[in-house]
Image (cartoon, rainbow, N blue to C red):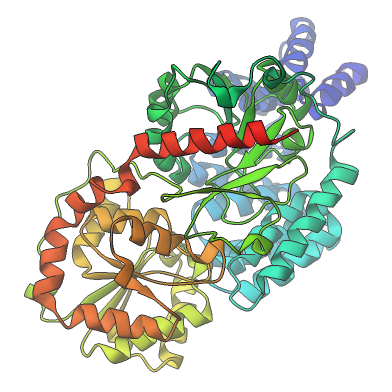
Amino acid sequence: MSHKVFQQALEQIRSGRLEHAERTLRAALQRAPRQPELNDMLGTVLVRLDRLEQARYHHEIALREAPDRPEFLNNYAGLFLAQRRPAEARALFERALSINPREVMAMYGLARALAELREYSALERVALQARTLSPEACEPWLNLAIAHLQSGRQVEGIQCLVQAVQRNPVVAGPMYLSSLLYHPAIPPAQVLAEHAEFGRLLARTAVPNAGKPAASHSPVAEKPVAAGERKLRIGYLSSDLRRHSVAIFMERLLASHDRTRCFVGVYHTSNDDEVSARLRPHADRWVGCASMSDADLARTIAGDALDVLIELNGHTVGGRPGVIARRPAPRIVSYLGYACSAGLPGITGRIVDHITDPPGSEHLALEPPLRLDRVFLCFTPPEQAPDVAQLPALSNGFVTFGAFNAAPKINDRVIDAWAGVLHRTPRSRLLVKCAAMADEGVRARFTAQFTRAGIDLARIELIGWADSLVSHLNVYNRVDIALDCFPYNGTTTTCEALWMGVPTVTVRGTWHVSRVGESILSAVGLHHLVAADPPSMADVSSGLAADLPALAAMRTCLRKRTIASPLCDGVGLAKALESSLRAHVQAQP
């Protein structure tokens, strides 16, 4: 293989010019069609371009020509990860390690496969092995952090992320910042300071010429948008308009925008799926940009002459801070996907409501609030939800509490509050369902915590992932009352519980991440389910449990109550959001 061709294609890949790399590699393969390195590299490029069957063809040629090359096995495994087939990817990474037990890249890939398989104890072991071999690398510390966070060990997870940030702050920073939201003892001021510092880091180092707008012209100068003389041009930037919880809260909003008064553009940075296909008709322009570089995507957005770009990721996986820092629109606001101020350079506001961010709380954010006078989100009910069953307590003879949030949200103080609920409600049980509970080591840690809190383990049931949405929702039919987490409240889980007739008890917090539960419950008229503090969760919960006839009556009407409430009112949200955005656009210089 020509070293020059290899280096040329590698540079094209590194700069995000994947189509150019494909052309370079295909031209070289015309001369040497079975050359293994060229086929392996082309397969890797095609995976990133979401042309997976073509990628398979070239990866298999590479492995037929060189079956014992660990790096080829690693790259072929990446194809299976892209196809959401982590068990097959795991087998390939393990085969690579059987050839070379010190192949660190295979360990990194195996760690990713184990995370997707939710085998967090095995993930921890592999990450420790990789750290031994490569102690100065960032990746082992990131994988260790995932293993700790998914077993509810927030302190240990954050400590690992501090080490990762020291090694590669740009790569590890988003996960580190997100993890701070789970810890109940870190004050908001410290969390915000860390976000602000990361934003400054991005402005200095991660993006060339960050702060120089890519948007060279704003249509506002021609006709004032607030006067209604032209359409408000809105864009949404997200990696999650697919099978993801963000899409659940975007579907009705996108469908409800007044397209006679608004242009709606969508810039989707993940590969589209069937959910994306359902959302796409609600946009005037839908750009699939999973393979675009930050610079190319920023130029594309700027070319659409938006008034405002709404970013939906913050520091979640798939975010594109490099696009935001290039300022491809005159105004960029954060919304929905991240429960805190992102602190990203270029953000001019955050879409919130009067409960999540009440007047006087401006010091608890880094960006100005675009405060709606209604709940800031809209839930799209699942089409295939099972019917709401009779209140389980009526046949069980005891109340079953349920908690369905992700394991990183379940910290020691949450366990203590839930234990307090059980102590106050005789003979009651607690069902905890989350993906991490499929791991035996994770279950052992949580059961030990409940034991220390004085709870008989016969009263605790821990279950893992359900194989379908219907199966998942059907578990709610075993639950009488749901319990929220804090400081990081649930969102999707609370809405799903309401849809299944299960009231959720939450705790009022001090800032956005810990006030979303109150906002959702208030939207459906359940203000009385908001506890003033963690100890009061037992008062509210035991009070509900003490009146089973009232609880049964609530269960039968909660779905109708939810669908008729602002929580499911897409038209109302779209009107409020459009009005707020018009004011924001007009107010900015």
